Each structure stands twice: as C-alpha cells, then as structure tokens.
View: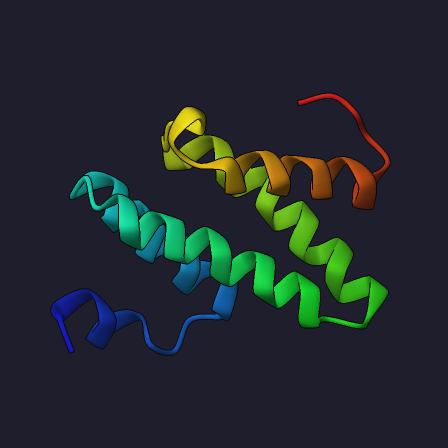
Length: 93
C-alpha cells in the first residue's frame, strides 16, 4: 500500500476513485485512468437505487473537468458525459 492509499482508505468510494484517476493522469498512466473510468461505469451499471445513481451523476459532473484526462484517449469519458446528461436531464456540458 502506498502513502496515498494509506491515508485515504477511509474515504468514500467516489473520492477514492477520483484520487486514483488524478494520480494516474499526473503519472501519465493511461491504463489506470481507463480502469478508473471503467470502475465508475461498472458501479453505475450495478447500482439499482435511483437516488444513488443521481448522486454519482452529480459527482461525475463535478469531478470530470478537474481530472484533465484527454477525451480523445478515453471513449469512457463520452459515455460518462452521456450518462450525466441522461441522469440529470441536461444536454449541456
């Protein structure tokens, strides 16, 4: 377990995923960035509670712009943006 994991293991799942993606972007580790995006997509697929899905959509909407991942490298970003639009009823960025 690395330093960051030791000090953030008690965080909620969305914050842990965001931190992992941020570190992967900073380290230019595209495989880990993609893994993080796919983890989010898998969580959305497995979540059956509508309230929880909306909360995830709100979190994603707030977190994605700050991750600085290049959309052309990750089709998952487009999928997440489509989910946000559908879940929150917005077609805008």
